[in-house]
Image (cartoon, rainbow, N blue to C red; front, side):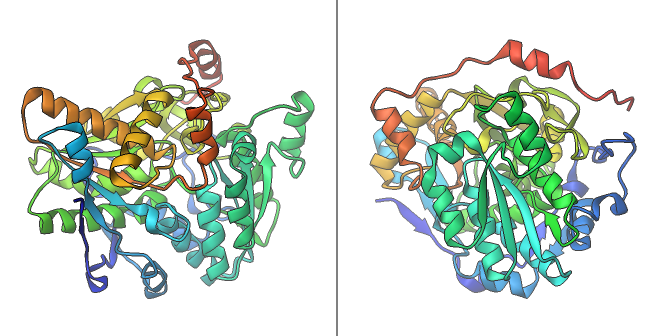
Length: 451
């Protein structure tokens, strides 16, 4: 039977890991969207508290986790590492497959690891309310949970196609006290402009970010909160990989490949970044990001400077991008539908430290169902991409007749995504081809940065 490897609560990491000191080169600069010059901390203060701004630009390898955050983490952390022996048996593979089960958090995903931290740093600096966006609803529900713990108001702009596809995610966000709006919405100037042009606009994370940034920037009592992409978000998530390293050691094994699904990059960074120094020290570990073929940012995006949002209000960063105007197809893995990725993840991909693969949603749902029927846990559509990649690795090991130790981040359960499974079982779900013409058009509008 599948085996859980558990840490005691007093073995939970007490510091986050910052990958910046271990990058193969200096991090790329973040540029102001109006001046195209490197941003200063003062440029970011309308959006973020100074505690998070300091983490965003920090060159320190370790940051101590405040006790107030550790106390809330202790509700569900440390999370189990599970050897998926039932899945191994079904696949008839010599590979050993391990997954880090982040679905045991109250919100059902890895997202509270940074949500709690962001709510804490805003609370201690006097912020009254936060504003954010969410794709599939996992981030919105996690931040709603965290704001409830710290008595903060929250407004969430949820990508319209997911708002319609995932009504129970909306309900979860509202249960913890936040307000949620379908994006594009009538709550912002930018949203109203888009609805006037196209009342049926399905939305995108880029659009939802624009609405949230506009709302936060025009409210002196509010700050903006982002659930992925940014350096401090990736750092908060490294508690996942730090725990996993200890648990793999307890299991007496070391991974040959570490896998996570990739949308903005936070859950992948969380599981993979703590292994970057090992790789630099000569350990033969591969770091593999799995993304949707219909939004193939890392595998087919251009590595260049681009706006983080559609309205061009967010800072400009160097990343693999499909163009800030790109609106991806309405796949059910809504949390992976972002035109760009974490600059840190992208820099490591560009340097060859991280690999990436793209998968169609039908093959991912096939993998999710196989996992659910062997291990008993129903994966979120986003998580199914990591499972697909892990199964492919296990089957390759079988073909080659080699033992391969596979570790992947089970980033969230699919209990609120059963409409997606209904569509899969009824044959309504379909694959989307890479929309090359749309991406080419979106890439024509990149900012002109001479750097």
